[in-house]
Length: 480
Image: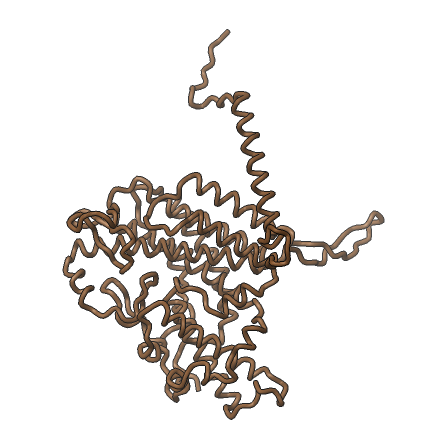
């Protein structure tokens, strides 16, 4: 009898009875977990079975948000996601996304009878927005986790605990003292590593923009709750305040000039401005669409044309704020929409895209920390400049494209020369023009990320731009 010539590492592993029993036990445990999770969702998070439960849509939204918080944490460092948490995230988010398989719509279909005649019948098919967006979000999810995995075994930078001695600490780009500081070699990153880090930043940036576009599109489709409308002032001036209202309604309006006069020094002030702008947009839109002349909403001395112009300007400001501060918390309108939404499909798409947007924004900032430490290593005077210059208009978890930027940030161009693609940062054609080699990533993996990102952005930007085509980001003086 001839001896086996199959190499040892190519032979199939032997599965023992103990391994099989462990696998069965694990499957049963996961099954029980899934039952408990869906039981909680069916009860609207009220395990007592009482009447305090929330809607199924909100329960699913909260479940995805809480799962992401427990799986990803605050992402203090650039490091691969732990294998156990990665498996848990993929398994449990798959359970929650499986609900969308049963959110269907009726579509016409041709069917041939036994007699050979053709007839049109109605069949069910997964809802079109879910069929289009769920696969895209799954790809963005995989790309983001893949980008984190690329930082395995890198040795060009490292982190120092916040409790370390001052002499051992690295560079801190932000004011978040609880984050570990970044250290790079005394001469900075190597040229190859610097290009690779920039490429990782570009990949994550594409995930951020695509998830932002999907999230914005879904939020725009959600209905505005009546309780939000009931609490609104009756006119835009009262919502914005006299100063902001006068700056928006001037004859020669420049969005960049407007933002330069606003206090954008903290997250709270930016969020407050966003809340006021969104409230004024809702008010002006209702006044323009209000047909009941006796209603208090329709009584105003402002003409329809001017109100439409003011609403257009407010939309422009809102787009600039979203682009400049991608890590901004949800506004009052967004929270109200999510809490009152009863559309399960919208709830899942909104929450899934939101958690991916949040994670991508955080990873972007961690990459920026490393690149800033590299710049400081090349030019130590940047630290002194950062301490002396005003930080007005810069949020820690944003890219900071307004006045008072740190030295490693690029000023925003004047909106008079902007297009909507410029503001949203869509540039699909440029994604395949440059590709830096990586010591840890194969070229094929790099090309895969770029091609996936380009396809997703091509789809999301087209649908989103169609909805926002009216908001041309040029000065109104060039249009009227």
